[in-house]
Length: 160
Image (cartoon, rainbow, N blue to C red; front, side):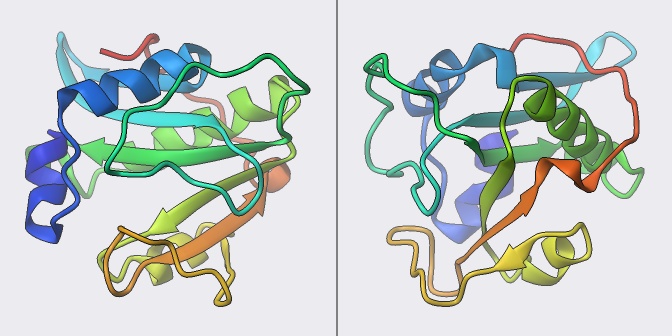
């Protein structure tokens, strides 16, 4: 699913990098099943505000310290055949609830492929002074508070 979603943008990371991100925070990564088949997934991991994963490297094991109050939504994908049904919104709502329950105050992301309007409509605010290296020419760093959503959804855990 990841390569189908991001390869055309030159942003596909490969299995090892994706696994390292899921392993970095399994409690904030989710798989969405429709019937008995995976229909999408979401990878989110703690990062300091204005920080984000390097697409060229796998995540390194975290050094225990005070947890960041920011959760970075690194990757969200819905299978192409199921897009337009609100499944991505369900994943985002589930992430927001999980993040708030774990004490995160903000969720950040990098809007790629000219997706800034999509994320703005979901309460994310752009930070034009930040230029995310390696995420493409039109990448925009954005964030919002975890208080933005109150919907409840059912999503299976853990990541693939």
